Image: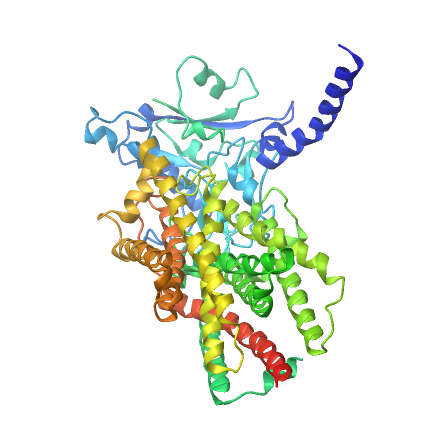
Length: 251
Length: 384
């Protein structure tokens, strides 16, 4: 390498360094990297087979919605939901359905916020009202949200709900130990951060008697979720989008 | 200079009164929206942006299109646009005002709007849109107003104005590019996820904005003594023709990629928009837009029909309506349908939503009327 080549390479690498990190920050890659070593990385595993052993069961949904003061509007327009079921075919649109029976296609699959490692909602928020914690939880600051709903447009999973009206009159029984929300802000599943802080599992996981839900730390090699994912194939919703969802599905 | 807006004839005052009445009506419904929430609109969990954001997108285009008169005049010294440039700049001021207001009325928590500045978030495209739109608004107001002042005093515009004009040219391109990036950067919405979006936005903007400018000039010629001149109008009509052709070409390019590429999630939205299974309001307006676009195109490419004002005016109106639909309702709504979970939600704007929208348009038209009144009065005084 002559002097000229050396200088060329040196110049390009120095110029490239800040550009690379700025680009990562801009595209949200920096968000994915920010999870520190020693921090937990929370994830959920949904065992579809176990879930189907109790058809029509709503234990997890009811548990979540009642402790989090989620209103029930009973119409799809104003609806607020943190965890719910959708037909198998819509949750995993990339699978083959040509030979699957309608019954299988329509099987209810539990869906909730995926707490993505590379969350598009966090990237687009103009006020950082939605943000990612070091332990991977994607959180909402209901007091900072201006209600622009850019995060709803950016979420590929339809996980976010907006308070189109004052939700309080539509909450069946208001729980005093959890905040209610105001009209005009976005909300979604929080992986029960208030329970994690006390060392408890999320309410949906605790409520599931069919053992269809597991929760734990992906950074912990011996954790239940890691064990479940090691020996079986698992799926994540729209993983091709690069959002790195942290809700895993076992077939 | 502003005092000139306070002296006018009967037509002027009845027009202003009509606008004020529309603003008042819109405001009454906005107060309702403020207290009851955005639930009084047709938007919902699946279609979470609607008429407000549709109008916002269209109007940013109108604002950006001022560059089509500013650039030839200032960069190429194209004297024909000398009398019309100021009206392009003032149209931009009114259009940006409306754009910003449409974002504001769309907020769920409008009282917290300054959180955008309190917690600046450069990774959000909306943050950048706020910056470029406000900068563009201020620049055009300063440039337009100061140029007019200089004209009134019959002196050359101050030299510090030139750099601002030069800055406003790339800024015009950037406001619409950044607005396109709000949509085209979302992996979640295949309908918007196309690198062609910003160029498409610019092309349709450079057709619809100048078309609106010609219509406004023709109205001014009727109700005032001011005339921008036949040649200027014809030159702008030519710009509209080229921009419309490019816009149509881009749209066909988009259709090719989507349908020859054949990726279902990209095709679904187009099929829903133009297909029979869709929502009548949406499908019918999408087809109307398409028909108007082609009609305008045939009137405009034929030099004879373009040169006759009687036919030109229909082409221009067709362009404005077609683009308003195309990058408004036909663009925003199908992005949300089918939803990420395959749901076919129904969206139709409600009456409060429509009246608030009309109120915002009236604010913009009032700003436009006042600025145009001042400019026309100054020019009338000079010629008499």
